[in-house]
Image 1 (tube, helix red, strand yellow):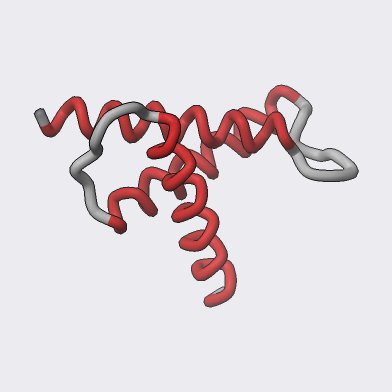
Image 2: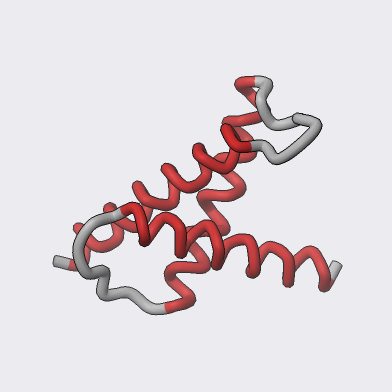
Amino acid sequence: MIWSIISAIVVGAIIGALGRLVVRGKQNMGFWVTVLIGVAAALAGTFIARLLGVADTAGIAWIELAIQVALAALGVSLYVGSRR
């Protein structure tokens, strides 16, 4: 149970950071907001990838990762846009 939470935080931080890299300009947001957006994007991206049938691959699930990063970028954009 605890390892699931830790891995969700780590994956969320990575996906959130990648989402922030995609969005242009300065984003004035904290680490935990980045992690929360990343976790939400990772969960939603996995759900969408499973619906599309691209989640289970023999190697790295590049399409699933791209969906997750795109959702994180969207989440970062929405968050930053709502703060201005």
